[in-house]
Amino acid sequence: MSLFSDMKLSEICALVTDGTHDSPKLQESGVPFIKGKHINTGRIDFVGCDYITDDDHQKCIKRVKPEKDDILIANIGSIGDCARVETETEFSIKNVALLRPDPEIVDPSYFYHFVKSPLFQGRLLNLRLGSAQPYVSLAAFRGFEVPIISDTKIQKKIGQTADAYEGLIENNRRRIALLEEAARLLYREWFVHFRFPGHEHVKIVDGIPEGWEEGTIADLGEAITGKTPSKKKPEFYGDDVPFIKTPDMHGNAYVVQTEEYLSNEGAKSQQNKTLPKGSILVSCIGSVGVVSMNGSPAQTNQQINSVVPRKDDWRFFCYSFLKSIKPRLEALGGGATMANVNKSKFQSIPVLLPVDELTGGFQSIVEPQFAMIETLIRQNIELAKARDLLLPRLMDGRLEVAA
Image (cartoon, rainbow, N blue to C red):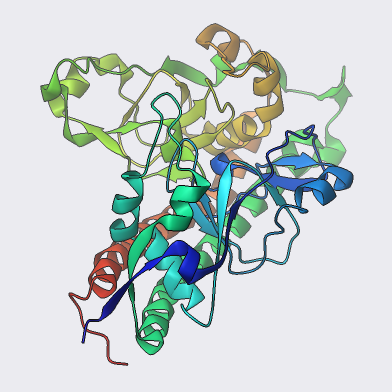
């Protein structure tokens, strides 16, 4: 008896649909409005997403109201990006398909991890239409036939195994978020509200603490705009030097792995673009204001301006300041479809320069926190590797699971 049954998504799911076809007006607060770009990290981004009014939300959910265990999957642009709904938070969707697994037929956890698997994703890409903006039609989704493990007991065990890895990774993410929030709050207390140690004894002169200076990002350190080595020279690419792009930075205080790497030869071809570990990277074209640090010497593409701190004990002050200016970067970028903050604009952004005792004191407090953040990020990468090695073998039957 075969372990698998070929079934269409319309047979596996109680609902296969997509989000609103309208374009409600976006605003800075309200009900989350989730598009494909808000699920490209494998999780629903409720922080960096767009928002709509409750009236527009009520119109959107007449088509579909996302529920817990639904799967959102991009069917326009980055085909296959997906995330599971794990919250009761109300939100609307656009430019993504929604799959609602039928629990009588398929275990929801198993099905979610199956949708993420190379087996599903590889077949899905064959359904793409269009060139400039690839898409998969709703009809194609509904008729998409995939091999599902028939035994629901085996499905459940695979789902539980996958969820165990996800639980460990998510726990680390929460710890990272708490550590980052603690550093952010301390930065605001000291350098925005001026409630730093001993502030009671420091005069405020022309609106700033005595001894502080007005400067620009150029005063923080050397600004370096990245560059892409010639693609006509394949020998410039390999496995030696991380080549960082904005997608590598999303959700990561430290970038410790990248989608693409340069060879040593490629890095040497533009040696002045090499960044020492701990440089602060800021996306300045497209999705501006994403900030990370590199976990090892690296180079970036031209969409990223980086700051190599002039003083080592300015590092986390620089990072925290650059994290805080996303709205200013967006305004400087012009608010266009493809925002652009060039190096000249970037370097000229004003910054208050505290006395060295404060930046050094801030560094001594948050440095252990950021060291733990880097450790947790690296742990999550190893957990994800182990999960991604194991699950495909369970999904396609190469490893047997007892019912």
